[in-house]
Image 1 (cartoon, rainbow, N blue to C red):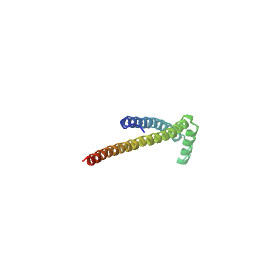
Image 2 (cartoon, one colour; image 1 turned 90 degrees about the horizontal axis):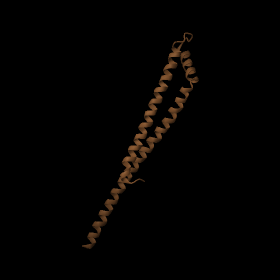
Image 3 (cartoon, rainbow, N blue to C red; image 1 turned 180 degrees about the vertical axis):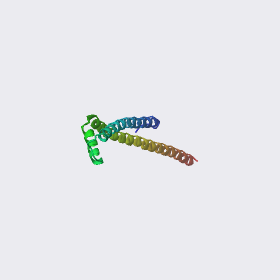
Length: 123
């Protein structure tokens, strides 16, 4: 466990990490949206496609062969797990801080009780 005074900085650092991963996630999601928009455009303007099912299948084919899209999906999955781990770490630090504060309060109460008990015995 950290010293009580070190928790605020550690919590802030963990929260910053969550924000950084979230920012990376948004950038990857934006890139994925562009790839999907391009696939939609390609499938929408192919005149030999006769219905929505054929357009959806063509869209899927376009995305399937796009290696950058596949890398982006892999990155999205990795970053999502990384964000969840960062959030779990942040919550762990917050909970540890709460426990450390309670333990510090308990120690103060015990010291006060010990002091009062010694005064009573001395009377």
